[in-house]
Length: 311
Image (cartoon, rainbow, N blue to C red; front, side, top):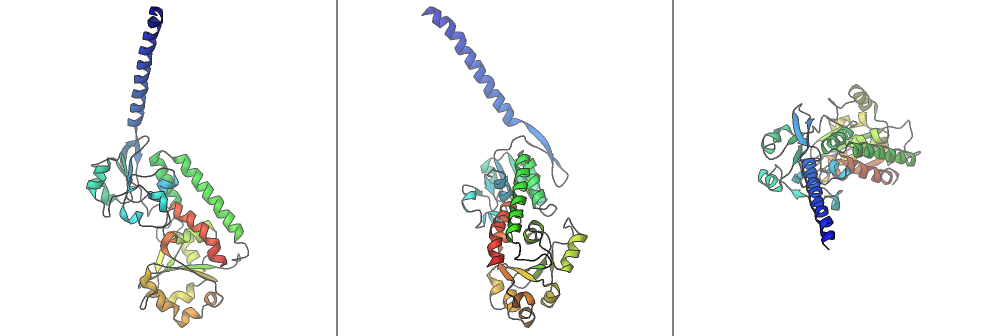
């Protein structure tokens, strides 16, 4: 028995030492940092592997990369398409309730607005990813860099483009190559035509459908969407911009009610005389998920587009 104790005691002590080393290594790993230069050009020291992340905008992108944030702004949580995917995420208000964010004890905050940095950076390292300066792929790539999930971002983009190609194949013969597609959007009293970003990302970039000449020229002149994404137009300009097919997004119920923009457009002679309307090549969509310019919303829109265009 004494011989057994003689061997066991040093062995147990060795286990304690190794266990302590392992815990120290884990602690060191969790506290490792790196420098990230955000959209404003500011260098921010962030965790090597962020764990408790709050974001004022990029919920969708984070979920696409397989990481759920602990807190998100109210207006981002106000959607239907994410459903159970966002369960458990804390609402931090809009404008952001700083006290709520503080209670969550984040190790990183991602925002899309430089205006929020001053307050939020007192709580945790805060980086800005400029929504308007990047397309949906660029946004996902930058979120991937911040979360140390760049490979996941690359894989998601590749998978999305493959799905888009499969949808294109399904749409062969539905919209001919020489046919054009216009994208309009109505608010209560505003009418817009869309280019290759936001809603246009699905139809023009993902599915490679052809915009009307005016929009095509605008896209070619401004491929990075610096100057042209949408343009407010008058109702009288619709015939000039109407393609062989028309997609129109009605934002909010007010636009379809009496006095609303779509209500008035739909009853106008110039609308009823359009070839696309008379040929029933008119597709009416709502804001969720079509209007939301983010990875999972785009993926959901792809799932809906075949039914939309072949109904």
